[in-house]
Length: 386
Ligand SMILES: *Cc1c(COP(=O)(O)O)cnc(C)c1O
Image (cartoon, rainbow, N blue to C red; front, side):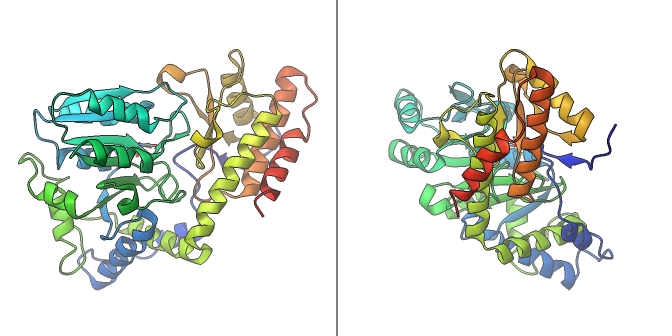
């Protein structure tokens, strides 16, 4: 087999820049030291524009799901009624977590592959008899590559209810705009290994003043994920309540530097270009996109739904022949789609690579003359932006 470099196109974990790896390689320091405190302070404050928050971003050692769980266990009391907008696997995960904590969960199930429309949420909320404690939504639903209109949904939540509005941004924060005040989000969570270009292991939680109050008055049963501990430990020497993953925080500091150097607006723009290039290229190959509506498509990941059962064959071809890893479908989409991640440390030329590989895979599997056609459309889509 021809040698190819390993390349990762999964929607998490994602490639980690060399300079971030380098930063993580610094000598270990005591976590109650000024050096560490300064590093954490940089991360907590420099991530503020990325989360669109006015409060320093809380950093927890844990996977993205720990951030989701913290958003539940700090505000949802047993017996509370909550609404979860379920547009795929990760909406369902939020619902499961809420159920684990004894909430009455009202699921608004949306057809997978489409975004939740504000009218759907409005009708649903108005149909509920009990007051709702919190409404949960997923910003980018990674399992379908849908980007939900979290701002419009937030407007509905606040118009129709007194509920807290809690958003899972694990697979898009760091690649898409966020503004908690404008979107009326009370808690916004994310993780390190997606658009934030880090290895897995850090969870991020941004809270506003109202959420802070709710967290203060939250349930008694919580310990490691008790957000009060994390928020309070920012008050004096900036630190964490428990031993932090020091190296990952050093890495996160470097990521913040990279975002600053590129310019946050440019980061957002780059992800839009990556989305448009990927969609244009995939379409040119005659491969259907799971998310048909351009307005619902995430800038960070694209799900492709080939006719028949070719999703697995294409994924396998890329892996076997080009050492290129895309993700398969989850749950009801298993075997039906494959997903291309294009977030974080990803450039237009990475998209060109994966599209070239797709051209060759489709050529091989279907005998069609596909050489150059996806790349051409992708280049045109790129050009349209500059
Ligand atoms: C990846 C992901 C998670 C969970 O993250 P883990 O790090 O696997 O726990 C949650 N929500 C969304 C939208 C994700 O993409």
